[in-house]
Length: 219
Image 1 (cartoon, rainbow, N blue to C red):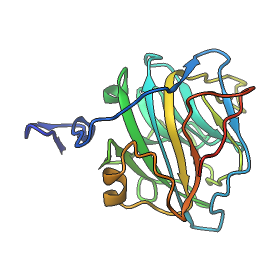
Image 2 (image 1 turned 135 degrees about the vertical axis):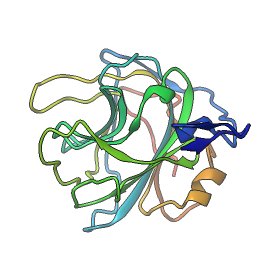
Image 3 (image 1 turned 90 degrees about the horizontal axis):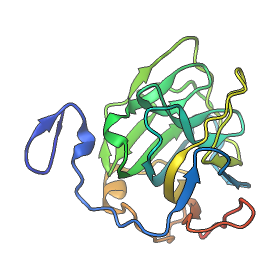
């Protein structure tokens, strides 16, 4: 149960937006063949380590299955059957309902645990700086272990089992990777902040423009 900034309660906590998002010059993805490849990301890859991935987006693709971020091992952050979160490539989403995330700019921060099976207990979601109640949805079989890889595909993904592409439709801005867990106060105090002064910030891409599907790290 959440409370918005007028004191009203609701079933989702991401109605509360303590700091308006200042979004400009984002990258658009057409839901077809748009994508960005990012290589050589120095994630923390030790067993049980925590990484935080942050970005802002506006999703205009309806309620279809669409991928925003995909790792080389087919784990992906995506919209799937009315939910949004980390897909374990096993028919399961660890995340939150997606209805309140559609057709508006939102800021997402996700804390991921490396080298383990993702669960609602070890995967944290923040929407506009507010921590959400993370759940497991759509489970069909045992989720796979999540391992970070140094390469990300932004704006598209592909199912290894069905050969289906999940091309994102909308806009993405300010992708950041931290090789540690960000705290609630750090997240809420730095929504859409362009600062790059942090030892644990290992990747920052503004996503304003690209050259041959490549973008450049500003960290």
